[in-house]
Image 1 (cartoon, helix red, strand yellow):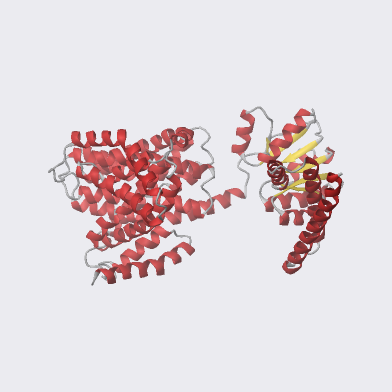
Image 2 (cartoon, rainbow, N blue to C red):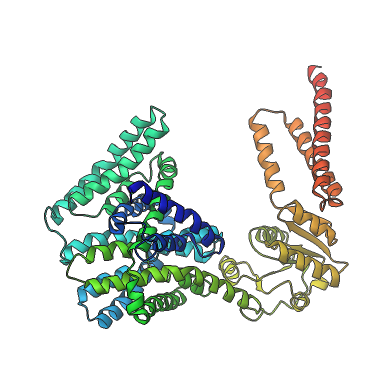
Amino acid sequence: MTSLTTFAALIAAAVLLVPLFKRARLGTVLGYLVAGVLVGPFGLNLVGDPESLLHTAELGIVLLLFVIGLELQPSRLWALRRQVFGLGALQLIGCGTVIGTVVAVGFGLSIKAGVLLGWTLALSSTALVLPTLAERKELTSQYGRESFAILLFQDLSVIPLLALIPLLDVGLPKAGRNPLMGLLVLLVVVLVGRRVLHWVFVYVARFGSRELFTAAALLCALGLASLMEAVGLSMSMGAFVAGVLLADSEFRHELEATIDPFKGLLLGLFFMAVGMNANLDLLGTMPVRVISFALGLLALKASVLWVLRRIAPDGIDSARPLAFALAQGGEFAFVVFSMVEQGRLVPIRVADQMTLAVALSMAFAPLLFIANDWLAKRDAKRPARDYDPMPTDPPTVVIAGFGRVGQVIGRLLMKQGIRFTAVDNDPEQIETVRRFGMQVYYGDAAHLALLESAQVGSAKVFVLAIDDVERSLQVAELVRRHFPKLAIVARARNRFHAYRLIDLGVTVQVRETLLSSIEIGRGVLENLGLDENEIAKTVARFVEADRMLLSRQQAVYHDEQQLIQTSKEARAELASILDLERKQAKPAKAE
């Protein structure tokens, strides 16, 4: 089969399978792995030399390390130092020690092999976990941030790991591999590389050519990768160093955007090559052993990480999702196993079993995310703990939801000496707020017993500051039904949230972005030199027009066509009013 036909077959398999796996919430990586199996020797056999393709596709790992290096701005790394160097080191050392010991004893390997394999199998898949968290919109959650930090530390640890392999006497070709020379070249690159690379990109940027900039970015990553390989270090280390040297450059964002398509394509090709090179004969000859090894790896890593995260501070809520997210093996394991297969440290049969087990663990990884979702929904049906006892003195105000909005309201009430009771159902948020001296109670305002315990019936105002729209509406309906005379002031995420609150009889609702957007607009007009009185009138007219529009659209917001029509009419009406005021103001100024 020609190279062009091979490439077409790979693209066709990816285009057909990857969207299906993504839609099924099984992840794109699993789709690439299955596509590789489909076109490989154990499928349709459309690729003649999958091993050579694997070496080419390793450029995806190289570019991944380059992008990771670009992300390592000193300020960002310092902000994440506790999670990166605390949780990250704890996970790698804990999982690496346990897995290395089990593997060395189970396969009868040396201590050196146990250290190398334990370190390698403790790594998780950055290329799988981060895109999955991004797809699920969970990168900003606690366990999402911790996953990113641990993966970042793992990616950093890959550099010494890859540098260590030639020193472990794994039988790699020794010609031209002088560790001291490699370290010397690395030191020179670190010392002078930043200035040289900056000069190169300034020179290229003068021509304004997108293609030339892309070529320079690839040359930077692949050139330093080739240099590191030539002096006995790894290509990945060279690309990582290149990224770090450019992390504080003004070209960082453009470089990342330029490299990202190549990285994504080559990473997909890499996973397909892994699927093609997986020795599926082992599933026929020793299926129990290989599958048990894959499941054992998942169970061992998840258990160790769960225990370690529970021990660390504030780790109760994130321990399980973090353990499930990082239980699989990582893509760097394939790179390490392909290197050690050439030597004497690990027998080829063991390396083949581990390669297939890691691939299977990555295939099982999306199922762990689904399992965690199911467990989270099950746990959500019962309180994480008993509700806190509420104060005995009746409050003037009750605040439901003590996040960004609720805290500001609470501070205003404290300044006025007004008694309030704040409740929230997020234990982590409660502990954070309490550390700063504010009193908040654990409880779910969607339950009538909690509202009665908080003495909502004796309060004058109920503040609804819950972030989640559906829970906010649920609480509003509950309060309006059981405490009909109580004044409710509600936070609304957007106009449609406000419409639904009005439907429930909540007459005072404030959209969370409205006032801040108005203040930003006021600042823009001030910087444009407009008269203060004109700005005040414009803002007042806008606020009044928006209030009237909200009232008019409340009756028709279920009808999209009517909603669009009233919006157009309101804009035209506001423009007419503002234009009339400007015409009336000009003669006054002339006088």
